[in-house]
Image 1 (cartoon, helix red, strand yellow):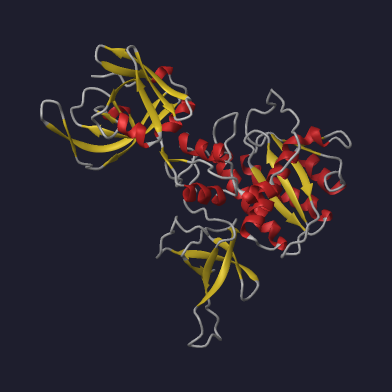
Image 2 (cartoon, one colour):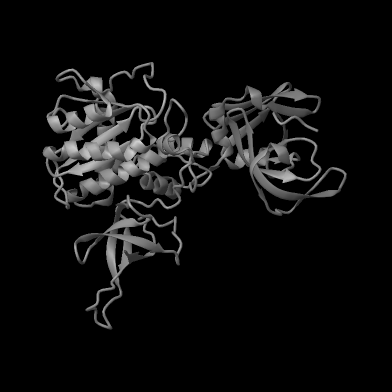
Length: 436
């Protein structure tokens, strides 16, 4: 039997292959044809899965019954715009620009690659390249998440529902240029001060801005450990103490020890909030006066959320009074998609101990339809109202949509009769939504 970390290059096979089912993760049993060996005998392809060696992942490796060695397909490398070169003692797999991904050695008449010598980031070349439309679609679905973050989700299997593709940015996103321009950042601190979720929560307030709901401010609360984020919207700063208390009570189910950090604003430093914090034994620390850098976690999250919302509104060409919905959607998608560099997981997984499912994500601002189920509707009047997708419900499994006829935000559930056309450049989804 061959070793799982040793792979041989073969010009005759059209797919990466192995004969060892025990090294395959996420195995899907499916008859995929057969292969012919050198002795003119045939063996069936029983399915496919992922090979994981340390931090290296090889996607969609076929399981061939009776195969004694692990084989890399030269043709599959070439199909992914990679060059394979052979010399007397070694072989190299590299990009057209000359960047080396794999380096192998020759053993007799076989060229082999040892995965233990390969860096994890190089597994990106083993994925099929996504089309420009697919790349931009998922970029927009995830609130204009950068392409490095998209590929992290795929390589680490950190989310369910996103296709196993290599996402690349073939051209600049105009909306990102409008929404994300920034100054040089302050250096991040090298040591982490928390060891579990909810041990330290950073708080900050952003606004005022005009929204369709009449809210002017957004309160951002960030867990220091997982970077999980909560956003709440306020009509005035006076509402901040009560809303902070309600959020703290909401997360107190999983609470063991906690402290919070904010600036010296009166929305955070007052008798109502101070009395509650003292009653439950929470430690409240403050950044120095006029030094927002000391509360940098929430300040950076504020900026990230507002930049994403600005970009989403610019891309969808929606009016600015939908800014709160854009911020809320950006917060929801970022909790499910931004990878925490400290742990290599998303904030959702760190807080909930399970991988998030993002299959239901849709492009902010795309067109949809809601059922017109008014009692006074005429028999020949249209059954559907055109609407705009503006987010996800916090209280139920539903979408939030803006009805263009009634000018009202509704929560609706999907009627799964039609599938999403991923080639649609507008990112529209053809689901008929039933109003809750």
